[in-house]
Image (cartoon, rainbow, N blue to C red; front, side):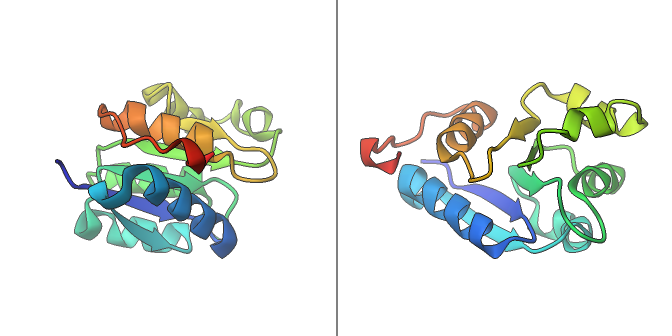
Length: 141
């Protein structure tokens, strides 16, 4: 069994908690989850934590998820970064900027969540990104 390190970055503690619980329900002891409340801390701590995968909100104050992802890449982080947002207007807002390249790097790097976190979509994206089947628990969803 491989232990994977994940980083959840979201300024909403409830969304972080719901996402962590959903991941832990499916992956049980296969993951170690780190949590950070903003893009600045993610940028500053990314190499020290060195996660296999980052789930990060786009909609954060101060440094949003797109800017944080770009800064993390500049610092040498090359593992997948999955960006999420509850805003339906995200693609329209970002399509005319050079930050759309974050989405072009990996077709699974953008997850659009509804107003409530879509745990099933997040778990499926996580499974694909890690390339390993999870210990799926039917009661998780």
